Amino acid sequence: MKLKVPMLAAAAAMVATLAQAADSLKVGVTTTGIPFTFVDTATQQPTGAMVDLAQAIAEEMNANAAFEITQFSALIPALTTGKIDVISAGMYATDKRREVVDFSTPVYSYGDALFVAAGDGTAYELDDLKGEVIGAQIGTTFADKLQALGIFKEVRLYDSLVDIMRDVKLGRIKAGVGDEPIIAFQVSQNPGLGVHLVEGYTPMGKGDVALAVSKDNPDLLKAVDAAIAGMQASGKLDEIFAKYGL
Image (cartoon, rainbow, N blue to C red; front, side, top):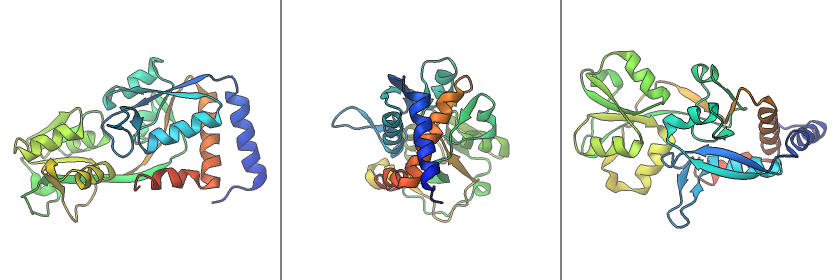
């Protein structure tokens, strides 16, 4: 839906009013969320769709984005303790997380994917893996949902998707579950990971990705939402995600 000119002007005015005094915006990102957030090996700097988005938002606020690399499971604690101002990662805006943080307007939506060892061609659904050991990233909604099913021998928790892929490849666990676009991108770029997505898998659900802000900072949330509204209207939001194949 396109914003009318008066609405777009109002959004821009809100950003300027709420953030004109901002000097630095501390943004929490991870290194394991390709193509949402990762480190460019050439520059050793954070990059990815959510990094570019946070940078664009900061520019709209006349602020400098200072990226803080943090493990995914530590992002919300870092936000609630004031170590960072905003989370910009491939994080779902869930009701459970809304109990402790506020989320911006959604910027992207996707579901989960199931992956197994490269030589395993079975078209698994989760019920087919009853009694098996399956991996998920700690702090994700996927881990919570898998544990709630109660059908697995163990839902083993890992710090990163790469760690899960390693153990699936080595046969230490049967399968892994994680973010579909992140896994698809990593597998396409690095066949040596030794895993592949299970074709035809039915996701447990889809979720909305959004930026997270402390509940103590409503003005920042308004400024972030205003910046997103402007980028949705101009097409810049779509351009940012398209750059990374999303």
